[in-house]
Length: 306
Image (cartoon, rainbow, N blue to C red; front, side):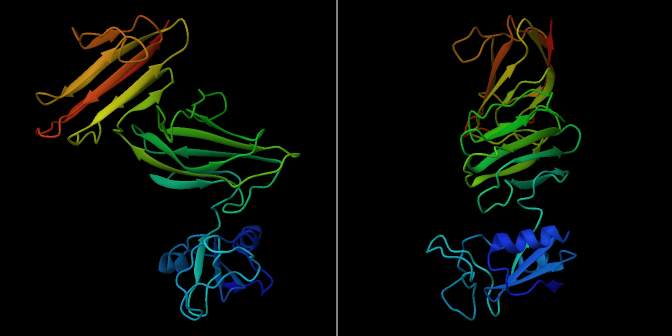
């Protein structure tokens, strides 16, 4: 590791300096010292500091306030201490990237500071085949005119995913994200997202032409006391073919299928392994009791048809 001197006096400044020098690790010490590293030995040893966290109140055995930070508690930046190193992964807050791990975090550029103007960043998340991606918002503050676009596939032509709650799901194993900031508006703190590869989530919204839906924790037994809702929406003037690949549900638990967008729509009765909607939306609810033994659940596949 090496230092760039004592003039780097904020977390953002140190991370950006190391980023500019193609170094994956940024380390802060003694309130105003910035070091950049080529590997993650220190990152693994010390872990990642929490931006704004004071480790404790003692000057010699905790994180000191960054010499270039004018914040007051609780909005204090910690830049290491005489016996404390604060270590950061510089890919956090980068403008775009490719993620292939089973889980991870995606931050707006320059996070935890305000994102810059005139940004156009794209990320792709790719997990194992036969898995889907659970994407959750930890925080988001974006100025008017700027946007975060989420696509259910590998590029901008894939179906757009609308944020109706803090967690959304892909229908396949790839998500594409784009963040755009205007050049002539004030910026804000941006966003922090987390993702997780899963094969059986409790509920979700599906907008792709085809996909799979699994019971929670599939292929393991589903948990007790679940109440999960999925909606499937395909193109207008299309219907949905829904097929059972397997189903094993305990007595008292149920999978309810409705021919529309909520529980008030007409119930579809399973008379065969494949059923069809009359329109372009299906609503599914899975319920498991809190006092029953569970089973392996279900695996479904759907496809939009003209």
